[in-house]
View 1 (tube, rainbow, N blue to C red):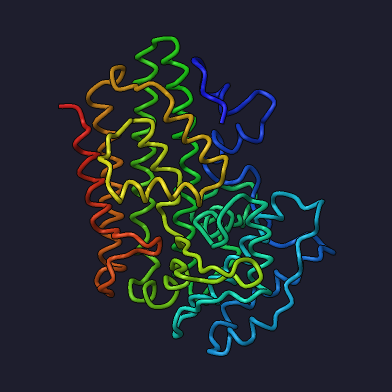
View 2 (cartoon, one colour):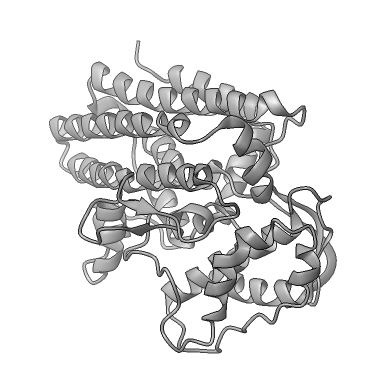
Length: 380
């Protein structure tokens, strides 16, 4: 990792000769620079995965799904000539398939991922530099399409590419997160402006940038609050949440004989809140929970981790921001986490005694701690 130099975040993170990165972060948030592929190109040897992905929710209705899955002939990735977008779609298709196999609803979690699924999944995940399990990027960041390509990346104009079940509740759950991620573009652009203003000791411009951040996070809170509109708590917990559960003691046949543990898909793998925590330098006390949060970066795209490290290297803006705007931004973050906690209680905690979330953590305690410490960082 190249150390961040004194100067502009834009120069460090978005080099002038890399317009895709600039578009991704300042125009698309943490979403891909171009819309995800919905299917493989015509004639691609990977095209059979599209049909398999389309049929997956129906196949999972059959308790003999695992027997069927062990017989599948998964096309291998070509050694070269595969675009980044194709790698991501391959990861989405195979990640869903592997999680469907291990965590099929109505069956005990499987302890062996068969060779025909494990080998191609590990291949694409090595190329994407990530652990071999479906994570937040595959479940949300790369799993959407626009009805109107010229329209916004927002609810009403987006749908999912891949799902586990035939229920719109799952689509809605994913799509709410996609819009939240799209709105993060304003956050990252404001962080860039704040860093530029710091270099010029322009406190007024820093203050204005923090105002934009506060306004954006409040907008994200509004989007998050729409989850109950089209997602039933009982359906979430019983029908599709089990599929995004962590892998515990799973052998990847043909890859490694030693059982492996991997954290399942969770919003903690989103880079939005970590970017804000890094920017505001919120001092979360070290605990097993903050260690878990740090571990979540292993499941984020590498370019997101690089950006988080660079934001962490920025100097504090606290001395350049008015009390009102600083506290508004912190309160927006706390409100986002508080509603997330409310959702966790109504969609998960009331249905289960297991205190662990899909990522394998005691989420209720974790979220409460983060809310308390965020509000404790407000100016008095």
